[in-house]
Image (cartoon, rainbow over the protein chains, first blue to last red):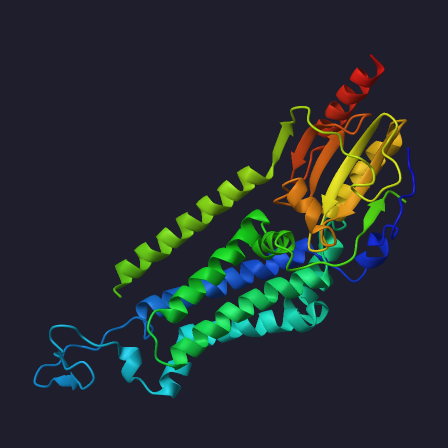
Length: 210
Length: 144
């Protein structure tokens, strides 16, 4: 029997207009996963993890520890000696920048994200109505997570830290693939745990049908 | 890193991610009959009353993507049965309830009998037929 509950009435139908179809975000996650996988590849085979070719005939001493560096014994990271421009022009870095740009776009204005516009204009009319939708809050939360990881990886790469970009790209890839292939939104699961820990949330609310 | 090493690493990343996805999905879709425990009062979830014969208690959050669709589905089910009430609680505002009912995912749906005792718990998106079956079981035992 339908009864109206106390507290704020169901506000979902009115909210739905401003929400983004889950399938649009899964498509975007698929694109992000592909970009991240390419970034992992370039980081693993390129500058991010490469060691300098062994060159004999010189050595260096670390004054603080007094440790000697002998090129033949332990080749140094190429990234450490590369210029900042070379670190930024690494294909893995550029791919990560593209991922970060898309995430930033979603954090600010998900409705105008080019991938979403593509989905809304070409795919949505051919599909059934949305069964699952994302509110602005969850999209921003997920986008900020991806942006944070991506930017951290990029900054560490600029600072000359090897493997950092690869690890960041792998994390982004895993989260994006979970969303694209399984529809699992890690950020949403995380937010519930944050709520339980009392780090999110506000006044009371209960909704009843109509 | 060599090309073969990179390929191996990417394969390992793919396998780990897929395994994590399958595990999480397996954990998410669970229907469980609950052992009779303390009754849930309407005031606990912020409602004035429970359903006369049974209550479908849904837990949602504002970040939950499928809660709205599940809300509509469960509302239809409650409409189709006399004395059944559907309550949807937004846990974003009630972290105490998330802890009290150990909700680790949304939507999580409970079926309460006429006395407010939890009989069944659905994790994730519940199948309509399963909810209907469990609801009718509770209604049947209420009439008996």
